[in-house]
Image (cartoon, rainbow, N blue to C red):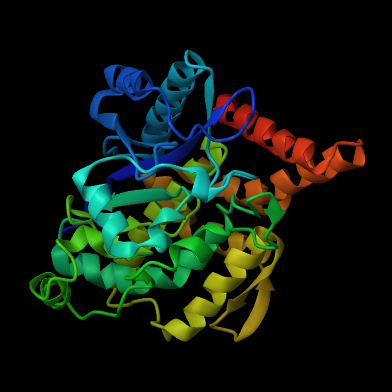
Length: 375
């Protein structure tokens, strides 16, 4: 089988905050989005809620190239927002904003979502990061999807950025998934034997009137319905662009590794989804500070140890793809913590310094604005 291109593209969703109040801008000036579109064209788009924007890179041969464009997109959104007294943050939940105060973008697709999904979509005040990797052969796309599902909790753990919800510490590193999992057709994908089996599944849902097309299937990993890619969607949006590059590097290198196994008539063992969901929950709960189950050894292992194993296992493929440095940065994330850990440290420090609860939450927003600007 011909080697897939393994091109990489990154999509991120951002929250737009008012620089004075640090709350979300529920109804941004329409000129703000127009200005973003003049600067970035089709690389920026509206999201379901008016307080959000989404950016997406072009497909790139290497992660460093995609990361460079991502930094440029972040900078352009930040510059445009500043002209209106706004600031973007890359966090999968806002520390204290309330979903009931938000307004959805008036588009036919979003109006239909609101009518179809009710309050579950109204409270979708969350942002994610999606990474597309080019896999042109359709059956290979499904085969790699089945195997890569094992590693989705590891990707999630390295990206967690949603510890707070409506002014409270949720006790989770990624509360985003708690909100998102209330929607239908989310979570781990069904194990499938071929692309034709996947099409039969999606066509059944379309014919029966449940969905209009396969873009309404929101699995943690899925064949894109628009591009010849395998898209991972489990990760929170990373507050720091360099962390987003690491998530992309790990995912791209993983698919290269799994394809290399296939050329040797080998494959990653497929585990029951109950076991993978256990790790998904542990990643959601603890991020990199906890342990995941090493299912090959049937024991818990610190995330830092699992990161070392991933760097060792995927290193040759990362070197060949030109993203070895980005992959190795996972070691620093595991040691220093993810955005959720940093947000909690800022919050605790503000309280210790005498801030009241509201001031402490605003301090968290300030730290997220600074991290976004750091590129």
